[in-house]
Length: 330
Image 1 (cartoon, one colour):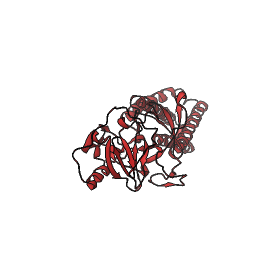
Image 2 (cartoon, helix red, strand yellow):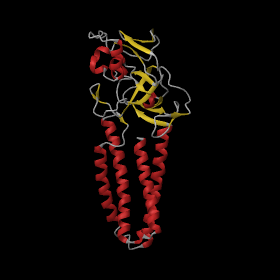
Image 3 (tube, rainbow, N blue to C red):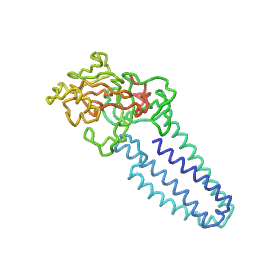
């Protein structure tokens, strides 16, 4: 979302700057230029309004978050709205260009609105990129810690401020710790890649950190072991199936198993048979192993491998909706 807001802020700011340039050159004193410029303003507002509406509607139909700027469908609908707004703006300004005072007042209003949109969008983009992001739980993989449709804030600065256009962070308050609930971008570089029955590229996931860099992690009959010790205090974990799935039969060497896991192919290789009997694997440097609290219904690191540190966006912080579930997660 922050990329979209940044894009909107830049476009609105560019309109303000270009308006000042054209006013200095007295270009907008010409009726035809004034009508076109006012049409561009109304078209831009229509584009932004339709984009926000399309994002809102698609988030309801498909609540999974994407990290990309726009989907093609959102962009097409927004362009159509922009075209309609452009025509409407030209039509509404036909009677204005003959009166210089009214034209100047109309242009002043356009600039003021553009400045407001630009500053608000850029401020929101900065806040979401560096500090706090709103997130909606898309599935039941984290039950009962989070339920589908819960809205929460993600603390994006606790692990450090991300430097734009780089994977680096600076000034971390603390490192990622075991049992932290984190939001991260799905670790896939191929948009056509299928994991857990669907394309996950660009989506934001929320899971609990189980393995830190260098940890050896395994699952035996549903019980998680870290460095050969069972995690006995997993009060957050839930199991909905009465039985456990037997271990895979087609056993490979430990080195091959580790390689398949790091290449994100373990789910394809073993399917559901690794749900309750997994590993052991060693978490690579600068990576984490994550799992959903709803262990029997979670598409997580067991199937698609480790999560690189630079893809972690932040720590789940506070549930703000619905009111009955407000509070800090455990």
